[in-house]
Image (cartoon, rainbow, N blue to C red):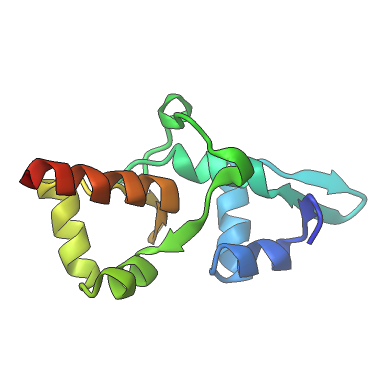
Length: 127
């Protein structure tokens, strides 16, 4: 995949349906139109997702530091599987322990760098 992604490639990268990417575009996801084709930049899409908080509200000032390459993006289900937990537990931890996730519509994402920092922080809190 090159720098510009088609709508189908976006759906594959972000693990959603094509219709979801179209909805995100209506909600403000940056895109480029060349003739009748739409293209998206992965880095811009990652920034856009990162700017969404737990309630799905968009705030571009919440983006913070973007790691080189934009960072690995995981779904809540993938994180739950990796940590041997349920997605419901992770949602509860978001309220109680500040577990970092971003909601875009009904889809919940976790950035690898934020997850790693949070796990490390939880380990330090136990000491």
